Image 1 (cartoon, rainbow, N blue to C red):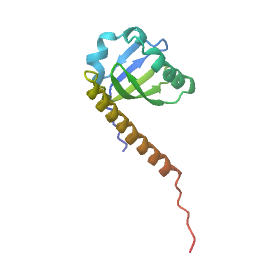
Image 2: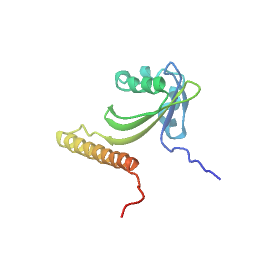
Image 3: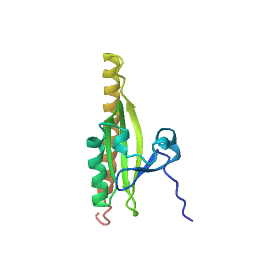
Image 4: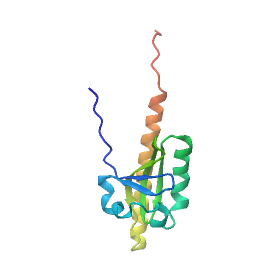
Length: 139
């Protein structure tokens, strides 16, 4: 018996026009009031940062994962194309930049970079493991 576990990350679903048409339980408080709205109208300045990745996912029909900074937050975003032409967006908040003081900004930037380096190292290790092969034989 196979068991699937639904991702417990925030979820927003966009139609082909980037209109918000679905909202998962973990994103309801922020996105439920925005149902039916075009994403870019709700989040000014976000279009050039996010849309190229969303377009790439739609064009290639493959999930695209990226890290982006927007509105004081650093998040890992995963755009997953669906068979019905819609796009499912999942994200994981990584850090919030503290812009109240210069010291807070420096500290939060350093923390963000550490998180990204740690995650990148983990991805590099996963990629390396995928390339390893067991070769039988030898002495």
